[in-house]
Image (cartoon, rainbow, N blue to C red; front, side, top):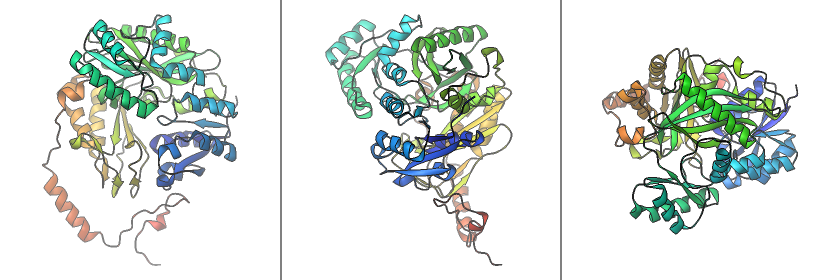
Length: 496
């Protein structure tokens, strides 16, 4: 078995921290990269070494392919892990790594190119008899053609960017009168986000579930799945709560879906960790949505229920090693739920809430894991995705897991900025979530005009005044490029 001695993590925040920790457990030296505003970020403090990329703008830092490749060469990194977001699914970045003799920890650039083009991916899946949502197989900039195709498919339709992801360049259109304006706005958004404004159409499905299968494929032809995840609780097409197993899953349906997922991976020539994503309608019919050609944000719930470290498997596969287990070796134990914690104000349409974290307390206890990229005293920047952490809990049953998650959320303290924690508590407490009646329109149906309960505000104000009066002499943790503060730096005023 071979393994890298040093890798560079081309990302930031909680995912960079999570990758660094697996590297440390495997005895791999980690190199972090950072922008001007991330000098004291958690991933910089956690890594074995860190190198400044440039200005805060992503194009000058985390999207700067030439600079990242140069840093990898100068530090002697043999491989680059892209995490998710930024350059994770960029075929040009993977191709540059290949040309530089640096291993890209992900699929080959050709596979990224094919799967990143949604219409090409649809054609690949159709050739492998994978069921796809009715729609176009060629993208276009021609709005008149899109309008004609919408009439042919039948309203409502989903307008989608061919190079899209993360909900950008997507619109649901219910009537012909709104079609042209929706295409223009989606095209403009896609052009800004991906440099490609091409659009295609799919038939819009009413309130489907979003179910994905975690896949692993090595260079030796071995392909396995690590069971499914349900990711139906979304806002603006971004997942916010995920769970495994899916409440809708039956043994027969799982067997059918896993067979199709394996066929999709083999048809695309995929290598490394990725997910095959489906929409599951109310009748139990499922359709291919896309392949996410990277590590997913929600991968920890799979790790918690299978005992398999997905990042470790990525590194093993990228190093050329075969999978050390077969499908029959993989078991699924209990239930797991993940909640994404964002620096956003749910009462202001989830507007970002950057700023300083004045108090930070993580939940703890059996079955609780928190993948975090922040700490007390950290300044959350406004330049990047506002995800702060991912809270994951596991228990024997779905209801026990839900209750454990509620306890964990209620003891999760992040002060100084707005977060989505109160919103998540209400979603998990809702009768329909308790029943497992989740679907992609869940938030719009049940929480469109959500507002936080005000019953605890007076108690919070009193507590704040008491803290201000009695907290003299306490020190705040200070960090520097040298690493986390020592106990002596956090004690406040003291004498020997």
